[in-house]
Length: 291
Image 1 (tube, rainbow, N blue to C red):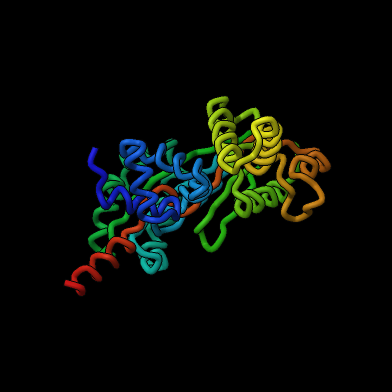
Image 2 (image 1 turned 45 degrees about the vertical axis):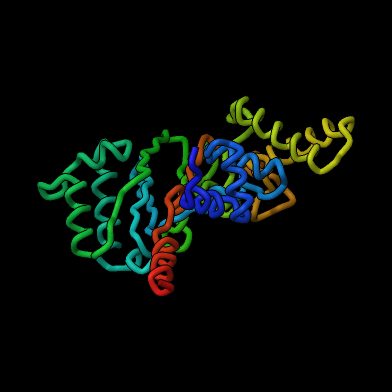
């Protein structure tokens, strides 16, 4: 397979590794991006798993709560400047109100809805023409609770990060505190029971290869891997994390103190999984200057 410059650039951006290392990783894995990140990690060249989510785009996320339902979504723009634009903010509010008052539960259903006789896809196209940047809607979710539960909603930096927690048996204030923790610490799961065996097996394999490549004796690698795996699982599981407002307690201990139980959480950060246009644009300009 031909390894292109764009493939090398993408891997370098995701991992922070050098260009030649990225090219070698892609060559060794026949151009498979995920396997290339693993290859670099195994060699100790890059902590790919921690850096792979640094790809970003601009815009804002939002939450709207109404009774026992809440919606959470992301509206993207090409630049941070436009995300502060009055028209963009008005569109964000309009979409939030329309979605919460509908039955739509995901992005596909929302895009088929109408505002003043126009489907939302058309509304976004028109807004793009007016504002001058491409706008897109994604990651729409509707969350439900019962009367005995509480929502905890939190927005950071006006919507750069938004979180929503469903808490049983405790106050809305406690739920909001947990939502703030989720925004700050970014857990991936509530507890270990939510993690698939495949994910655990993959991480165990990566940790084993890392330890062996560090030159550790094979007879102690297994114990090292068990310790590192347990540490990793505690870091990514909400209940096991030190609570941000009282690090002496885990989140689980804090919630139990007030008679609560975390049922679910959701966290959105602007631009996760979208490659920024600005990096490419800057390189494109420089290439023209240097001709």
